[in-house]
Amino acid sequence: MVKKEKSKFGIMDVARLVGIQPTLLNKFIQRGKYGIRASVRAGEGHGRQRFFGEADLYGIALVYWLFESGLRSEAIQYVLNQICGGRLRSSANDAASNVPRQTNQMLVITREARTGFAKYPKQEATFMDAELISVIVSENQIGLIVIIPVGRLYAFLREEMETK
Image (cartoon, rainbow, N blue to C red):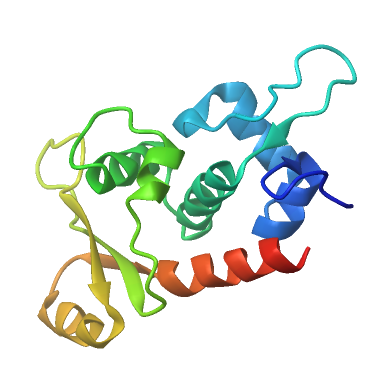
């Protein structure tokens, strides 16, 4: 699987680089989830291949890591919105462009249990240095904490894109 240009990836390249199953990626695209789309070429019609750019790969990777961490669709969209400063219906690509690229950066998502008849639990997504994670963990008494090493994952993805 050879890409034709530096920032042009077919769906199988994306699947291999990110680690996502092609069927799951196709579901995200077909359902219009998180603004994931092939920005280089949409691939409409029978036999037309989709092509994705580097920004698409980072956005797909971010959503996939959130999905793999166990978050549901609404929670994933809420994290994307929070990463984009609270803007509603933020896309995966927009959120990915706001992720710090230092290898020691972690995306920390804290969620509290729903109380009463609340439709949504209290949730906060922040980026922090790996050394500060223990403070969050020790201070959190009743909530869930999801920690995604986005800096290292993005560095690995960047290396894979450069070597393939």
